[in-house]
Image 1 (cartoon, one colour):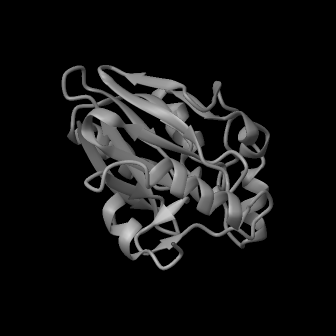
Image 2 (image 1 turned 45 degrees about the vertical axis):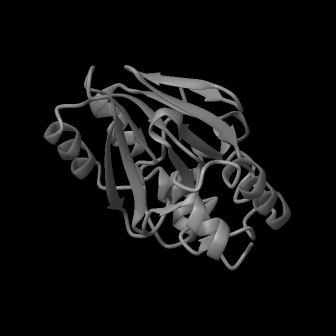
Length: 207
């Protein structure tokens, strides 16, 4: 499995490229900005982006979505609870003094238990509301990796004071859907450095 981490956009959101070494197909997770940087990283690894996965619709995670969709033609997927909010993020960005091109609508919605196949790479969808209603995490079970969006960070958790946020839901989902994975599982969050399930279970001050 190929994983490339790209901090992008004004809020340094982690955009991830998850690629299958055998077929050279890839998913781009949360293209928050800097489309040309993402495209160059795909080219460096000789990967073809066939899917763009949005862990949640906040503007800092979708800033490059319109351009990336235009350049690659990849399928855009997001949880059903966030499909309407996705196309409104250009206006939301303006409220924070930032500008992004309004994202296109999703091609498909995803739900708990869905399996996203990118060549031989399989990403399992788990619905983890708390930061937002439709937040999801993506599990690469064979590689023991989890892409956590803004659910869980190294030493912290995602904000819960946005519309649709809930501290109770977020902490419950971390405990029941992330902390039940093995200690050696690597966690790739939406911002900041990667961590492990074991480290966060033992040291994260919110738990």
